[in-house]
Length: 421
Ligand code: NAD
Image (tube, rainbow, N blue to C red; front, side, top):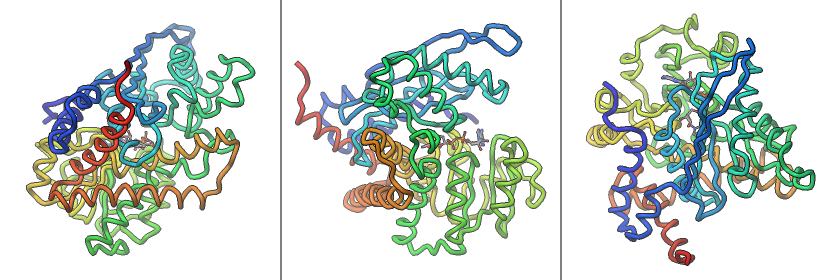
């Protein structure tokens, strides 16, 4: 059964529920319930066989009261205005909760990159960047990787953007994208940042809930950037990966998988877990029923919904993906006393290290991995503690508490700045 609401409707309902609880000022509520800019571009790209194909791309800028717009770029057939709008909105809450000086934005192009050659993907990326023109910029709206985009794609965006600005601007515009290759002014630790942030949050929750991560069990949906880094870092702490699902299928091994071997297999087999010989293939329902301490959805939205939330057999859900749980799913998990650490709290590590990269570029600095990790840890632990305070004081769930903290910060800034004119 598919979810009854779109991702944007779901994100809007989460906002409404939390705004009620936070008694958010009505005028500020009106502002935050809308996006500032929605850019849609249709653009032609020449394919390898000389044909021209038309593509549609989006950049939605939700709010920039805390600082420049910031958010990822997704390449996926499901990308549409509703999805990008929802993801941009989540970015505003994420930046506010993490207490970093960024607003929220998101972008995407509607296509399946697995059906295109590398040269075609480069052409699509460059032409999209050109079409966006001044709608992005290092001090205005800076782009980062998301589903099916990576450091290489960030490098193409950077090169295209820099080719369109005056030579005097070039060297001070490197932060128009973050998540760049390290040798191209990227930051140490950006690749693993989202997974690292997730693991810092899991460690805090484990301390609070007497869960020894060594020997604990977890399963993960998605073994891309977020899922694979989270798994590698949990593996390092002695936790056992007992099931994985990606777009190709699901596999299970209750005794725990050899993560290095699995990651090597996935790399060699078109980024797919299907066919991995040292685990049992299972169907989607069996995968969701996996008995473990923690489930980490780290793929796409709307996975834990009315029809699936009842299947989970875990203590904790950690939202590595954006929007993996819809309202109905949330309600069922609450009734079943399964805690959910929400996307805007636990997957913020990516935007936090993007902020570090942005700062390093502005200052022509290069921080080492120890510095990046220790600063990230501090920010993640503080965000977790701020949300936990509200969870405990108001006896509410983690998602609503995280929204209350984020909306509180935005409200304060709006009150101080006032509304022009
Ligand atoms: P990715 O493209 O690197 O990996 C996506 C993974 O999801 C792949 O393993 C793919 O096979 C799997 N997948 C796709 N559709 C699936 C389906 N229907 N069922 C099961 N698995 C499926 O993407 P990513 O960067 O790891 O992003 C994953 C999620 O994390 C997204 O929701 C994204 O918005 C969120 N996120 C990413 C970052 C980041 O820094 N990359 C930061 C914060 C949040």
